[in-house]
Image 1 (cartoon, rainbow, N blue to C red):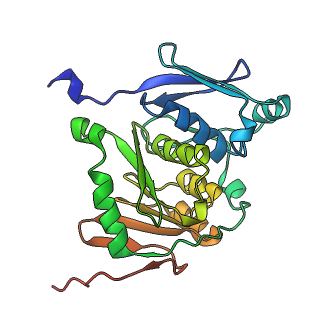
Image 2: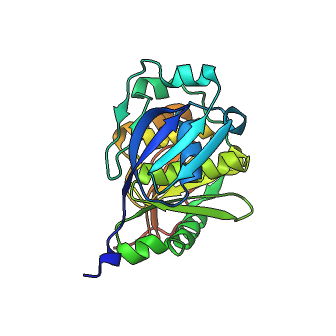
Length: 249
């Protein structure tokens, strides 16, 4: 098999004010947006104003970030780290109990299964790394205007961080956005969605039981098994209308 057919992953250090916060396995695309999205979704920054400097150095496998002394002290406090499941090693500072303390999501996004499946099909056309390797994950954000931002990564949670970082950097309105992912929706991925205030998340595969429980509690609509002409709404917040024809046997 041609070596180019294998997906790449690299260890990347996230350095905050000269101190290593953690090392992650990443694909070397969208690294600036990944850093912004990760820091935001973990509650380490509240927005771009909290970042004094950010520099990506691919050759050295590091991303250097400068924040205020107050932010640095909080980042390196004695909070417990949780290592996430799946490909591409990830670290979250939020436990299940922490996530349940998030504010409830107040989203204006309403849609239909048919519309979401159309967007999922378009999303699938914009994943060249998956097409080339068969071993990458993707995430995308889209809104009422139909504009779509797509990122890929070896880790499904990394791909989500990248699109969220794009949204933070461009000051997109969370209440108008829908998030799609190629991978399993775990509780930490649901937490990232809720933290930004997105009200609908969809996946080609399944959510975990814990993700559905948290989604029901925080007001996030979860749509799963989005393949072809099939999809299932796993929650009951009324943001997604079931307009697909029922299959007959």
